[in-house]
Length: 350
Image 1: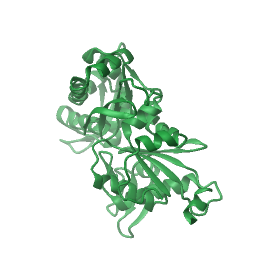
Image 2 (image 1 turned 180 degrees about the vertical axis):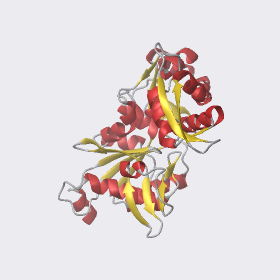
Image 3 (image 1 turned 120 degrees about the vertical axis):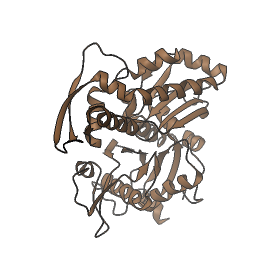
Image 4 (image 1 turned 90 degrees about the vertical axis):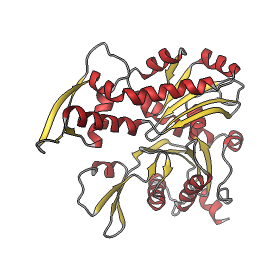
């Protein structure tokens, strides 16, 4: 009763709890938070110093007693306590401009396809402990499809490839359900590691994670470009131990990313191979939709289209598809109850 009363003054939230970024959609304001899923913890006092962008700015620059942690790995919780505090920080931040003393929102939260019941329970518990009144968990590709404005409820086959930070999720959907799917641990973070390893092997250069991500965003490509792209890459020389700067081009970075991109494409083809022919016919007609930050890699849509012999398009604003889908579900009670997963705790709906 008390929770319902407080809920009346709280904003219902859609949350994309990603490995690299957390996005929050408020029911009447749209996307209000888009911050890295990073937390800075003082190990001496066990206090959280910074969350999100402020914590990311500290990455690689902290003294020994400050720990920069990513509480989510491959889309699932690896540090429950820190995740709970991070969620509470974001929920409180959304309600900071309202008169709500204790926020008690309803929350729709995206979960990866390959989560166990224990992992789902951890996500649900973290959201409830952070102040949620009710928690509805929905698989990420379904949210991405809703966010990309695909007709999820119709008897039409559609394919979504959601390339996030920790995982790539490939799903064929029809009639508000997932028919065939694959989940692989190769996505944006793995591509950053590919660039770090390439810099080490080819240039004897030790590169930081933030610099590797910047190189991927600025000059990362999946196919040859009309005009060459170049960028300075700065790090530490592994031989002399001194700072070093080199100029890299898109051909070199494409070579660094080649294996990860090829693995994603192979899994897309493997998913199509086990998809019922009626749905494959629909996908061939309507095309594959790419979502998630990894889909912004230049030329990836063209390469997937060439390799799979199917039209491919990148969704409008692919980074926010999942959270926009979660936000849309807040307004659609019937579809929400139809596609949300059963509560793992037994009291997630209260």
